Length: 247
Image (cartoon, rainbow, N blue to C red; front, side, top):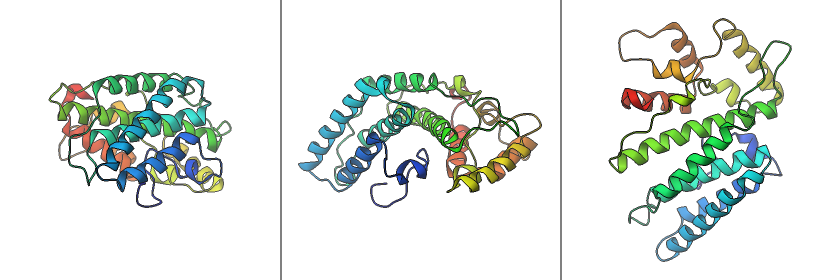
């Protein structure tokens, strides 16, 4: 996102294509570009600017509407990645700390308690595209937060954090639904998705965590993998290299 128009897989393209992009994301794009091109001593100034923006978001996020809340969550996770890993032009250690991680975890808990689930879905009762985007962006960002926690723990020789509490969540939405660029395209893809998972319900994170190495894979996991995008594949790969107690 710092060097091109591509966005991280936790951000839906519609979130950044609208004229009224949520301010937390607009600021995040600007600061990411500044960080990518910074070098000492300007790099320290960018780091401090990022930290001030994080402080503001941590103070204000409970007052945000849903689109702004998910944008703040996404921005804070991206800022955390920036602070944890050094700038390409600044090889000094990252400046992310455990106090910020705890604040990020608190935000994740808050997000998971605010319009995190979709109403029961039937052929005649589907969410709107806008609602679906917000809920799935929240889910993806929460999944990415667990990945980030895992990286932080590994870098600091800490025990990995368990994430069994998100086992009930659907696996990351597939390419055809998450990648849809119009309402009509999404409605067609979502209809196909409903048909695929009509029996047995949607595929969950718990099922993904229970997949074990071997020559065979169960039919539901195979069906989910057929439609998984890069984020889904990354999440499955991370799960397979994490110890069982971490999933």
